[in-house]
Length: 263
Ligand code: PEP
Ligand code: MN
Image (cartoon, rainbow, N blue to C red; front, side):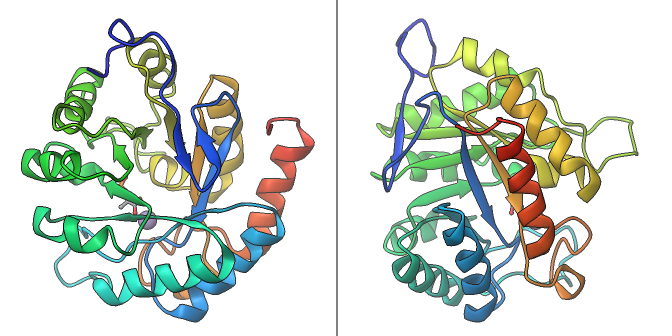
């Protein structure tokens, strides 16, 4: 169902007027994890000033260690909804349990399925059974074929509003947190009719690589870029190493605008 052979024209996912897949570039920004209303609202305000309206933030955080911050759960979703209402934004947030999908769709505009859950087939089926866009991230060690099949699981249940997100894969290379598989973008665009985004934060794990990788993503045909922004990354409860502060976010976005990489 997700194959380009089945549907030659691009799928467009409409998020509050941002039409992902329309040939323009769309940007998703926001903190790694929702920590407080003030934290999310501060980032949303900086985004609003730039005319950006796709806000991300994790309320359920699949952390490597069980002792690390696990997210605020439904309280986090409530904060996201409040901020989205105040700033007229669309919210993207990860859901990790099939049982939470029905509840979560009252709070968020896009269900994110994270890398660690790309082959959680019950979660894919549950997301496929609701009328809500899904942002599906590539698994840590998933082939492109496995990634496409995960999207197929969602669409097979009737939900075709899917955005694919390349977020880097595990290789032997240690210079970056993951290896951004940039060629996955045109391959996914050729093989499927779904929009494709690139998460420059989790793929690189390095602030100094966010801008060049965002430019590469856009140049190679990605429909959008995701990056994490936090008012004070040094005290962030997750991903303190690679989130941008507001000044770095300004610079990042202005550079993309100045280099004609946007719209
Ligand atoms: C995220 O986007 O918050 C996240 C945890 O990313 P990933 O699933 O790609 O690791
Ligand atoms: Mn993160």
